[in-house]
Length: 310
Image 1 (cartoon, rainbow, N blue to C red):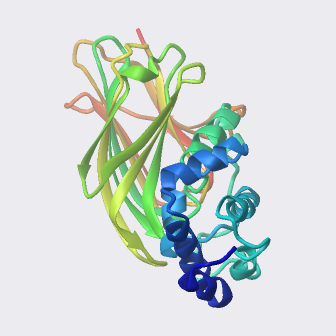
Image 2: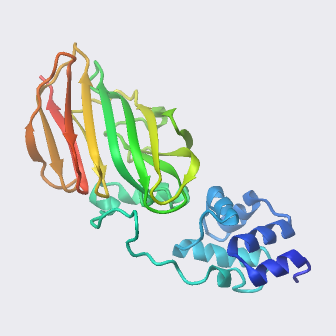
């Protein structure tokens, strides 16, 4: 069954990524074909994950990934558990250098459509949330248009890796009821590029990869700037941002069109989507028709600015 000497040696001596790469080459399969074979077995693994497994940039550890490895042994006609044995025991998951403080919230704690979001993230290889990255600084400016909708959002942020192999940040946009997700556009402005984008109309969710030009190691930082435009024209009276992990400084600026100014502008926080908002004070429009808030340190939860229309 094993007629390729390089493959035999790789399966005997490892490491896992070298053995997987040798098996794929020996069988003459493409990553696209591997992914298709996995999908036929009910297993969804992204092309990026398969590529990273081959390169040793990531290793399969989640239960779904381990099931995929067992299936790959069949697809690549390898002895049972030959790849699994090369993975060894799972890496310890305790807190280590560079990891964020305790207190992580599940997505269900900061948004109501968490099941749909989980499915979208799974479609982006299941490693696409913010587990690997800690937000050190984030500055957002939001533009409210004449139709009272948020027409544009620009974000500048600094992220710090608290695990090795982070190479992307996942942007999550949850539009208001009536948002046309097909019209939402994401544009990379500095130090990143847009990768895959996933949309779900019923929940108004848009998820997009913002790819770095390098793979971060623990402690590395990355600056990214990107823009999101939503021309759906849905009237809104607040903007809020959810944080699953403790974060550094957050600045939110909301700018209004002079011909459509709000009244009663206030900042707020809340621990989860179903909780009452904690009023944290009135905000006054400046000469540029804008308000802002600054939070020097953030605990997990939601923070934002709300207003009333006359």
